[in-house]
Length: 472
Image 1 (cartoon, one colour):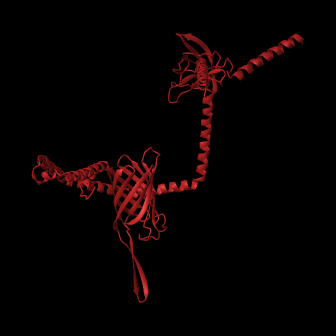
Image 2 (cartoon, one colour):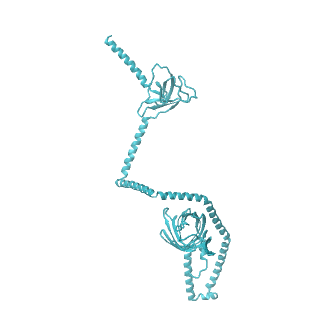
């Protein structure tokens, strides 16, 4: 066999093998393989050409046989594998193999309950492809805007401002580090506090209705007192008006010098005495106008004894820096009475606890945010202190401590009564309180919670001013 013939046969075999391998690698199947044709329209098929792959669920199932333009839209003719069924609700969309790969046509075949498409049918549902060029243009524009913003920020922020910003970041890092250290050091106290708050919430849920009932009772009684004395106050005003008219008539007679008193008014000594009395009255009226009176009702629940304790306080403010407090306390324990009984030489000691009403009378002096108090506390000598915490910018939050009963006369107590608490006022008239009661007595120590009502009474100071006084 001639060499030329051998070379020709070898070339033909190589061409046939390359053609077969090309069809296999591209997944297109051989051209003469039979199938059926479907049609679909898109507004834009940029990057998709004839012979592009058609995939269903990521598997090659056909090729784009023909691409044509009809009425401004791209019309595709698809040659589909006859073994693959496409249904009427199918959807076609343009996809890309990877970020920079070739485009292909992806088809969701639809649901088998619908009727299958036949040769020459159209896929109606399509999904527009993402325009990579438009997306790139938008990203380029956004990047330019970010660069402009960064340059403008650098122009505005000078060297000193950048140093300040660095200092702020450093301070924030230091703060977070300190907070981490504090949390690590106080982990157990925080757990105990959360546990106490949980216990307090449970106790408040159980005892809260009783507290609300007590406050409602106090408010109702106060309203009844005001209602009962409304007519008496009106009668007092009428009497005051009559007295004023009588005083005017007497003054006219005195001005004319009529009667014994009118003649006495001509005496210089009497004039001086009256002047002194008038001056004293003026000072008394000035003090009375300055006087501010507050009424407070408070009830507390003590967890150690599972019982309630009620308070009523009247506070008089002659000036802002000191005041007088007078109160009545309904103590469920009161004081203990110890009785020794000797029977057949055996001494039996019995301690009886009596509930009683106790009284409080204190003088208080304020120094900036600190208030010191001293006087009678629940029938015994004691003193206390208040400190206003300015977390809210005013006197809304107050830390207080009181100690009294140094002789341990209180029932079941062998040391003085020390109480530490925290008061928080919300709205205008209402406040809540909580703390630790009887700190020094192990067998009596417990947590207390409570709430109260405090308001200023403008009328009460005038009633106090009308009380008889021997001197001014």
